[in-house]
Structure formats: C-alpha cells, structure tokens
Length: 267
Image (cartoon, rainbow, N blue to C red):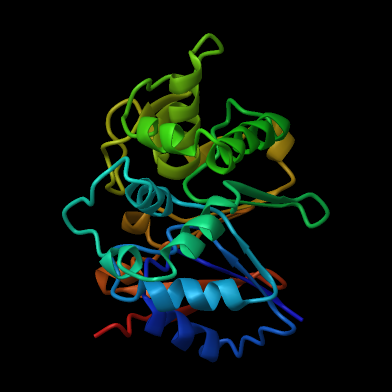
C-alpha cells in the first residue's frame, strides 16, 4: 500500500494513465493525491474526472483552473482563450462534475504524517491553524448558497496585501489567490500574480523560501508553477512539470520520496 502525489493533470488523461501504469498503481490498495488543476488546457477532461471520481482512495485540492471551470459552469464567467473545457460543459453529467468538484478541499493536511498539500502556496504570514481556517472559509463558500457570488467575485489581482480589516469579498479573493495562484510575494504577504518565470521580479521571492514556524516539521506538496519544473527541497516538493505544455507528468511516492516522470502522451 503506497501513497503517490501527482502534479497538474489538466485533462491529460492518457498521460495520467501511462504514469499510473508506470508506477504500478493499484486503486484498491494505493492512495492518490492530486495537487489541483485536474482539468483545462488538456484534451480529455471528461475521462480525467470520471477516472478520478472512481478512485476509492483519492485526496485532491482544487486549483485555479478547477475553480475557473466551476465559475463558467455556474454562468458567472466565460471561457478564456486557450480553455478546453467544452467537453465538460456540453456533457450530460455536467451537474455531477460540478457537484463533485465543489465539494473538494482547498487545503489537505495530514497531521499524523506531517504532510500538507495545496495547489499554489502557503504564505509564511499564516500559521497552519490560520491556513486551515481560511481554506475552510473558501470551502464553505463553494458549498453554500452563495457559491455563484463567490465564484463571480474571486477573479482579480487585488487586494494584493493581506490585512485583517479587509471586507468579506476582498478577504475571500486574496485567500483564494494565496491558495491557488501564489508564486512570488514580499515580506508581509504582498502578492505578485502576473510573473510566471523562474526568475523573481525585483523585490519579490518565491513563496516557499519562507514558511510559518508551525509548518516547520511538515512536508509541503504543491503544483501550479510549471516554469520551475519539479522543485525538491527539504520539506518541499513542487510537482507541476508542465505536462500540458508537452513535457512531463510527475508522481511522487510519499513513502520514500522517489519521483517518477511520464512524458506527455496526448499526441
């Protein structure tokens, strides 16, 4: 019985299945963790979700592309150039896909194994207790009666700094941006959301160079940052290796820290 974590799948179903075959994944015995962005930009979102939904031992976090799909499905946003989610939007099972995704977490923490998984990042200004509470706030918004309003409001790069006196809408937006879009930040929690390259803009640094003391003993798993490729540092694994851009899909075996890579098979 092994536990594997995979990076951004983004609808690359053939590559996912090839990777799982490579690692000899056994659904009845093994557990799969997914670091978000399950769908979009790849060719086969329906089969990707159907397969993941069938797994008995699955833990995922939502990424920005997953939230974007929910916003479109709920009618509060429109597809962006490059989106490839029409197969989901036109499918007879659309309500089931929406319902299942909306019930998934923003942050997964295993306190026994000292593991935390998030799509983009965890800012050092938040303790683990605070991060759990903020994630739960977003999850409640997704699962509540005001889901459409939350999804409509989540778009935007402001506010860019965390403050305790933010109004509810701004507070939800910046919390969502931290969890699902964070790459670079300044001390004090100032976000920079437009820069994707592997070189930090002036005055900023990658979020993972610092962490709150309450997370010192935890290994953090994240995706989102394809430009960096796989990041392997003590207590940290970045799992987005750019599969949807023609590169690789990565799996990490949590039991021993071994990485497995599968070249893109989407053709």
